[in-house]
Image 1: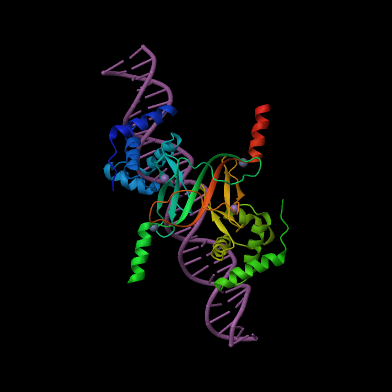
Image 2: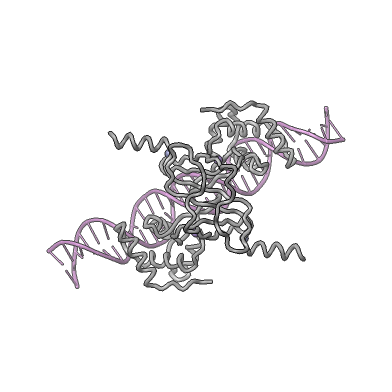
Length: 153
Length: 153
DNA sequence: GTCAAGACTTGGAATAAGTCTAAATATCAG
DNA sequence: CTGATATTTAGACTTATTCCAAGTCTTGAC
Ligand SMILES: [Mn+2]
Ligand SMILES: [Mn+2]
Ligand SMILES: [Zn+2]
Ligand SMILES: [Zn+2]
């Protein structure tokens, strides 16, 4: 499950991101960023805190919030908000969409076929689109399997 | 700006929605629902409260939350969450997408061309899509005009 | 290396958004 | 009209996040 993320990879990306904005490289920032890359899922700030704290016991929640904001500003992490509830964070900065499982609340990356351009939606005049994202809702494979198993029982 | 919503139209939709779920027709529910339809924008619960309270001074915030939940359950209103911050509510139940202005935080409906089907995104195996929505981000006409005016000055 | 300036981290207080509770009130079938 | 049940209400509570002020770390100048 855990992705092995070469430490140099983390350092390099982080360094570049921080440099662009004139911010400092710190142990906490590296640690939190590597935890995000490691799992590649969409944790809330609280989940990030728990994961990161296990390896760095003096870490504070305030720093998690600060760092997540910093990573967003550096362009290394995206915020994800698809429903009422805590913001989630996504460390995959390739262009992609999301699938939200309405059963388990999980968020999954959906790769954006590189050739498919903008969706064919006609914008009313004057709206300048800078970016778009498609949000799919439904049932994830794991939840679908569980439901099928229960139906059989 | 205000849309004239015939009271019978409100009553009829609300009655149908409530009937489907066995809930009662009340003055508060009608009032809040008609306020939503009247403006057709995407207010937060707090904004709904302020608008509705002006005409119904004893209305409580708790009722606004309860009613909005009720309207969602009845299929008369959608929740909209595109960013950290209070949930917004949309009373347009036709299939449509949203444009989020990153300058003024406004949310605008984008009609979904009825012929354009699902976006051409390849789902990984096992994901069952029940619904999708496209979220556009950018600058709304009003904010674009303001920026242009400032640039000229 | 030492040092000051500024950046960063931290715990805890403060705030914002939403949920819960229990008592009062309204609705509606009979 | 009446009783059973649904709804509304104020306020307490929780959760997620932001703010703050004090302490610590990093860095560039000497
Ligand atoms: Mn993602
Ligand atoms: Mn809408
Ligand atoms: Zn699921
Ligand atoms: Zn705008």
